[in-house]
Image 1 (cartoon, rainbow, N blue to C red):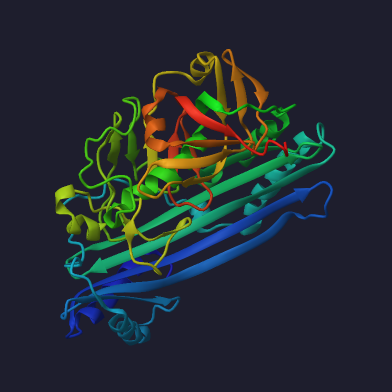
Image 2: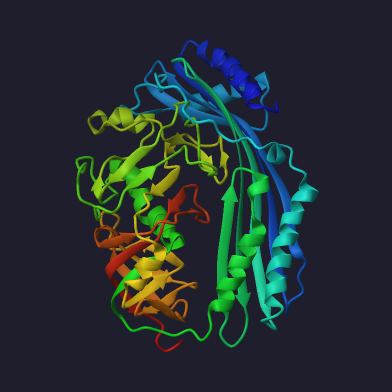
Length: 481
């Protein structure tokens, strides 16, 4: 089984089997086939290392079923790797055994009247990946970074990863849904550390849907330049500062603090409620869209994993909350919310995985660009901080509040009189604030958006810089740094 047509045919064939069972009222079959090639990079000047430290190729495939039985219970079961008809009986019995009563689960999704509006990229170079040739991307990354570092550093550490993926899915159900899709993608992350009395680090990344557009040399140059630029870093005292959040920092905030709240409202674990449409969440300068059709993004999709054609949805419109994202289950459970049911996905990294039921997930969170250049924004700040990277971002004071904490990492700068004057010592300042307050205090939005993938998350963020007034920053580790 090597293409999406085969998966579509398999789903239709398997569906006929499950529909013939006397106790099955409705059936859905979802099948996926994925390949992930990984290059792990590690080059250390003072420690024995191989450069291209690890190469591996993962293959994972299979199918799953969701069955609504005549006793009103619904069951889920999966089978890995084996697509043969001989597995159908066992899968059926597993679904029966796993069946539970859920009064809110009344039906599987019905076909949409909307036709697919997006054609996903399927790059032949990634479908038929020449892995030895792909390894050149790893060596090019290391060569570019190391050649720059050798002129400026006696000791350094270069680590990173490059992933290449090809994912296929097919889905069919008793109500008439028939859909299949293939997607390709590649993503690279690199960390460069100039070692010394005080280590200096720089990070960069790149991603896309076509192999030939993966510019690892530019990524390596950016990471190296960021590390070398951090000369004589300094500290700041606790206080309220005007802050410029880089696209990387904005992405970290959104995937850890905003995105989870869009799908956890049903269980009361979100500061948002189903009645919050129109609620002021941010400055009129802030608009955020979930855009599954963003060009050249590894998260763009033509169909959900329930077979619903996707479409862009405005989540925050000029500062006001517009809508949640939803799969078919929650859309049916809360009809008053009028949530679009096309965000039911089974994401697993760069892939779509048969091993889970669909859940409400975003694709590409796109922050609308503003009208102020990054240079003009910087020039207007007399006393502030440019936050390049953050980590350990998580909610505090309970999941029903927007309060959060996050620690500022490298690629961050102290701003004085409109200039980046000194690098900020990493891990010495913590942001203790509130996401809603932060969004409401946005006073400028940049004009140069970047596409950011956050490690360990399926959602991609496309964002310019955001300038925010009066962000609470607290100095930490006073006795260590």
